[in-house]
Image 1 (cartoon, rainbow, N blue to C red):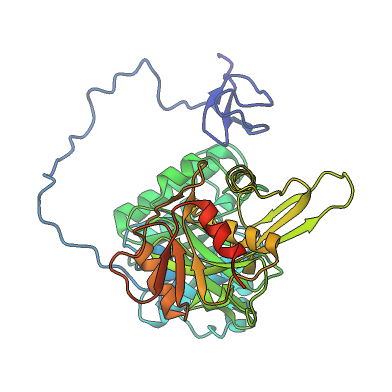
Image 2 (cartoon, rainbow, N blue to C red):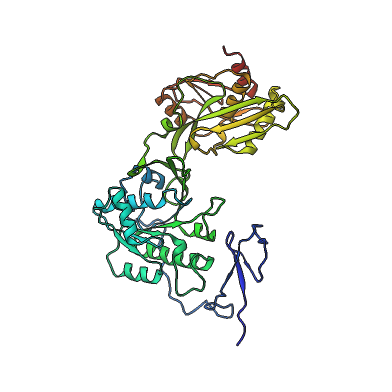
Length: 455
């Protein structure tokens, strides 16, 4: 009998190697190769051009019945999903341990069950009694959610096929599931990929919405093979600090709605509470204008969120190397913006320590935040406040130009709704919007002159 060949699969990119090595040759990630049993079902010697079942094609222009989304009665959860759960969809939700993933999904399942829909919650990490204890603490002990503690995918699918198709199935978590058709312990690459495939196929065949909870690595990415993110329809990340009460549910991939849509929650004694206006959350404590503070209207998916950017400049007396500390923004983009301010505007930051913070624990990825960051830096350097009634947005180029950004009208309308009377941004950024006084800026030196000339 021929000895079975060993093979090693990368957990980051899915590439296959015949021997173990510390670094993957394809994606250059370290310590991601894991041994996997060789496949014996398929072989290159088999001819797959015959013997199968013929499939039927349908024209693209055929009229079909639109899928009605199912609402969970959690408006922020539905917003992040793009309007609600789509029947037959597979959703992958990741987040740090203790962030509130299980609490959020238990609340969504309980509210759907109270509205008359059949919901199933299967836990591979807790006993059914422990889940019931949490439900009672959340005030949802009377919800008719079907609970089970199981880790065998065969048992789960056998049970689901023998009952009426539920509206929602929650699997907590996919790393604890196990299939007897695959070798390896639960959580290995082959087990996670195989179990997820079977559960996703059940969702497509039955029309039930299946939510898979995924663990995350120390880098914040979902553990397991990256192919798992390509298999599902929606990938969501539950972000926030466990020591902070606010949580952000962010859509990273959505085949049925906008990407980067967010839902904001606050952790309270009775579970997760929805935050209807997150702008007020990230602008709290702004009673008096202070130097180094600028308000930026960010766009997350289709939702405008106003956040406060804070900057602090500390002059050094000795020849020590100055620090650059950033929280909530890209440190490389801050270095680029400081270089543009020195080269194009003649400002000196080389002998000063620069500290930048996005208030409320928010993380910014919008390039339109360049102008707000520049305004906060110049305000801190000049020790002059910007005023509490102004917002700033625009992308800054290496030449010092203020470039146009998307959704300017949406940013201005949200700013005016919260009482901001002035806005500074790129030219033609306020076309068709009359709610606020718009003052265009074309070059970064115009911003510096305006702040320096302020009383």
